[in-house]
Figure 1 (spheres, rainbow, N blue to C red):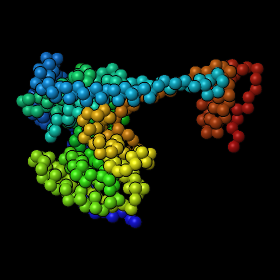
Figure 2: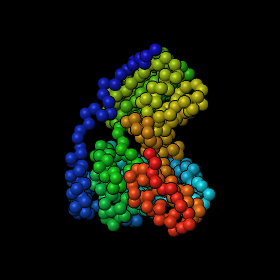
Figure 3: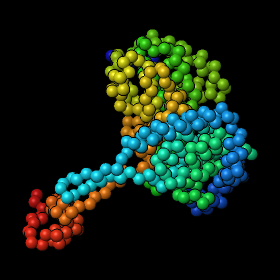
Amino acid sequence: MARDYLKKATLTAQSGASDVHEVVQEILTNIEAGGDAAAIEYAAKFDKYDGNIILTPEEIEAASALVPEKLKADIQFSHDNVRRFAEAQKETVRNIEYEVVPGFVAGQKAIPVDAAGCYVPGGRYSHIASAIMTVTTAKVAGCNHITATSPPHPGVGVAPAIIYAAHVCGADKIMALGGVQGVAAMTFGLFGLPKASILVGPGNQFVAEAKRILFGRVGIDMIAGPTDSLILADKTADPHIVATDLVSQAEHGYNSPVWLVTDDRALAEDVMGRVPGLIDDLPELNRDNARAAWRDYAEVILCADREEMAATSDEYAPEHLTVQAADLEWWLDRLSCYGSLFLGEETTVSYGDKASGTNHVLPTSRAASYTGGLSIHKYMKIVTWQRATRDGSKRVAEATARISRLEGMEGHARAADVRLAKYFPDETFDLTADE
């Protein structure tokens, strides 16, 4: 049967998006021209902050002292999990060399980028976990310098827990600078910082647009939109847990899509009946976000069978994908488009968001169809090298000369010719291009 939308979104993640390009471009241009002074002016304008931009060791120590011991332990627990998982990922990246033909060796080398700039949101929510995810992974990758920046609050500065997390996870410098100005400072190397090789971390639409504009002169993890989540559930799923998980992700923001895909109508109707009450039970700010997200962006889709469910999920390519259904191994083998996968009710997206070890900086807006999330690999350049003996280069030189001439690239061909002439002066080669 065709998909049956028991609930259809009236808006998409792109609906009503304001054009922020010109605003962001102007800020970036002004900061690049005006340097530190311009960034400080924007900090005063947008952050209402006039304290130190680069936090001193004494300020970091003072902020850390304000963090309760229980929260410190939780931050350390999350850091350890993320670090260990990143270390395991790093083991999958290795230097290699391979003799492609006798005497001609090609190789691969993994080199960490020099400087990482980690943006940690601190506006509506203080994203402690984002400091852990971005800084820890950069540290394990081996980046020479890591800067973490987060928006300060007027008269207060950066949230102490964010400062503590960034420090514990290995940030070399911590900045009290939010928004476009924070991204610009890391990119342009302001305040004595090295210019960032890569910018990572989530942010609002202004941060996302700044990363989009700067991409090319600096690397980025991805261009992120509103967070999104999809749950695949069959008749074995617990409707209360499914509904709770949907609401937990809808609270991210008014435009954060959540989707339920199922082959069981009774489950779908049960979940839809539970969601409004669970939303009403949230604190006010969370409640407003979740209510708008559920009303305008959520969908509940009824499919004929699990194959159609899987196909629907792959089409949506969600940032977060949860499976609460029988035969988890089948789903693991079948599904191919997601940022991060959560198998079974014993785990949940919230675990991945905060403490389980996998990274929560993930592709949104169906970008999971072509890319994964932040990992050790994003901070590393996979480069190649080669070397050869004279005999080993002989056959490669012949092929290069002929292919180059066929393409009309005579200069390339002659770079091969001169080597053949030097190394094998007594031999004759047919280096013409035959079409």
